[in-house]
Length: 118
Image (cartoon, rainbow, N blue to C red; front, side, top):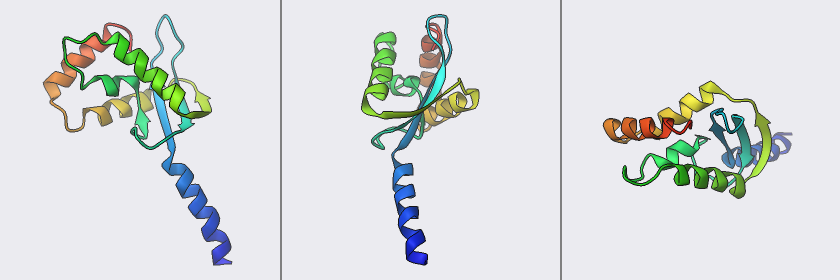
């Protein structure tokens, strides 16, 4: 009986390793939302396009980075569920993105990103 429960449990845990999400804030030109998808575990569990663009140089334009990040997230995975915008997920992705980074540089970059509605 135990062996019959262990195998489905291992399959479920393996699937959870590949479960990721990304959140886009609503803006005048797009609907916001949270997408749960199966993809390689090379991103944080809760992510946003902004997280990838925080480490780029301050003089580099931010919009191409944001668009490329969203395209990568959509292209690399298999979307399982599209949910409405989740402010908690958005805030969590921002906190995860800030970990281990210079706070002043991150805040300056987030201010620059916020000007474009991301």
